[in-house]
Structure formats: structure tokens, C-alpha cells
Image (tube, rainbow over all chains, first blue to last red; front, side, top):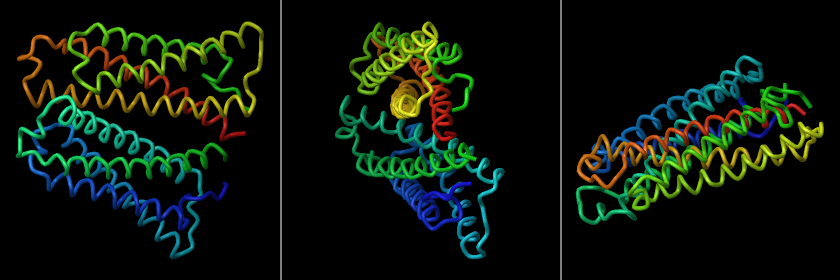
Length: 154
Length: 154
């Protein structure tokens, strides 16, 4: 199996996982602290999806740290196949959550005047949270492509 | 290069392209005929994104028909690499459009009572259009994975 940038058990892979974990956690933190998020299903789904991504990326981050510390090889077919399925499912759910929230946000800002009228809604916080969600998805998408490439090139 | 189900220049590949093209065109048709879609940015973006997908899938469908008719081989590195980039970009845009519209639809139906109050909005038509968009994305995602697998396994 090839050794690529970002593959499991390498420092670049660990950095990607840390980035995913931190930006997903930031997205949850900002959204949960914004007032009025619970009235919109898309924002609740964003929190749920980012929660799943934090769990997944944190798990793989720990595995990467373990592999780096004890010099273990994670490049076996079964492990990388598991990673690729998990990465793709999580990445699709994250993109879906970020896009549905972005769609609602466009409705709030451009199509209607809800953000200006309803001062209970923290629209700025929603936007920051969605930006973090997109950043998190982007980093996860890089990991997913690397994993898929590793599996396909066996 | 491997010969896989759905690879370019095969009947299965052609069927996938026809499916993508038909469901994306159906999504545009249903959305464009629904009253009140133009007031929501997400629905306009859905039409634009599905339009791009119709163009892309129709082009590749014609190429598949040409290859099948004249027995041409489309399995060269450059052609498949171009297909993989185009497929992934289109699939990501389609998923983004379908999800942002679905997020707005959830807001209309579950979080607020807009669909019942504003009788100018054809909410049923919006939902049918979004369902077609998801079907179209799903078929494109299958093609994208096959293309990526073909490129990675060179």
C-alpha cells in the first residue's frame, strides 16, 4: 500500500484529524451558544452531524497518535476499508448539514428580513458556525479522498 | 484499466447517465412549474445546479452512445481523469443544492406554518423536485465512485 500525504499513522494524517475535530467542535460550540437555533430543524441537524464528526475524527486522531507513538502500521486492507466507509458517510452527512443550514441562512438574510426583524436570532453566530462546518467538511473530504485512493490502489 | 459496471463506453454506464439526465431534467421541470419558487434563493440554485448536471450528463451520454456505436475505447488516462473531476464537482454541487433546498423545505413544513398559510407556494411540487434532485445526485455519486476507482487503480 502506498504512503501518501495524510494517510493513517502519519503526522499529516494526524494534523488533518485534529483540524476536523477542532472545527467541528467549534461549529457545535458557536451554534449551541447562539440564541434561537433550536427553532430551526436544519441547525439542530448541523449540531447532530458535527457531533458525529467530532466522535469519528477524535477516534481516528487517538488511533493516529497511538500508531505514531508505538510505531504501528495502520496500512492494512481491513483498517483502511473501514476508514474509507466511515469517512465517506461522515463527509456526506457533514456536507448535507452545512448546506441545509446555509440554505436556511440565505432565506433568513436574502429572501426575507427575518434576521433584522427577529432580534432573538443570533444570525452572525449561525453564519460563523456554518463556516466552521464547511471547513470541517473540507478537511474531512481531503482525508476521504486519500483513504479511497489508498483502498483503490491496493 | 479495469472494466467495471458503469464505466464509460459500457451499456451500464450509459444507463446511469440517462438516469442522471432524466431525473435532473425532471427536477428542473417540476421546480420551474411550481409557483413561488423564485422567491427562495435555494430553489433557484437547485435549478442552476440541476441545469449544469443535465448538460454534463447529456454530454457524457452522447459520448457513451458514440463509443458503443463505433466500438471506441474511452478507457484512456486523460479521458477518465477529466470525467472524474467533472463528476465530483457536479456531484458535490448537486448534493449541496438538494440539501439546501431540503433545509428550506423543512423550515417551511416543520418549523413554521408557511406552506399552510401562503397558498401561493406549491410545497408539494417543491418536495417532488427535491426528491428528483436527490435521485439524480445518487446516480451521479455511483458514476463518480466508479470513475475514481478506475483512475486510482491504474
